[in-house]
Length: 200
Image 1 (tube, rainbow, N blue to C red):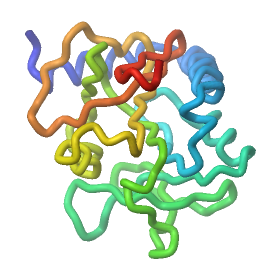
Image 2: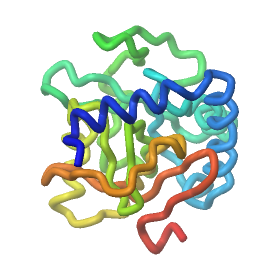
Image 3: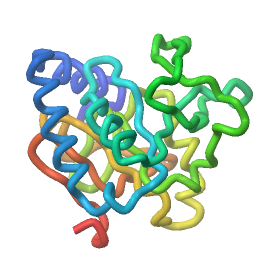
């Protein structure tokens, strides 16, 4: 079996093989699936992300969040804690600046920051996923640290952690670590994979 680093490299390459127009088409299909699901309809405080490294693009979902006057949040690298994220409210016309990874972020003013446990739904990028709800990220552990409280509190139903991915990123069985935080579901261009009964 490949180790996590080898698997990460291989699965990122799979993602990059998908032509950009196809990635955009798949992103639209995934958005349509998610935005019609009760988990999205019933959520008010939703965290997304800005596309990077040939990920599934959540931009169509962010548009729906703003159109439906829900609250949209984007991840920002925490300037005080290593490898952790802040979630910062972002309006459609907010000015974004790029972080050290070249990913755009809103400015983290105190009144715009929401505690992760107060989010209803978190849309998470990933490198690979399996049908047991395991997620392989880019390796920094940002999301795992930011949602570590869900591991100690049992599988809290707030927030729901939903991965966004292409079918090409599905793997039969991922190697997992003790600190990995499992997903509640994954949305691809073809399916909504539900890993908890309340999402079925």
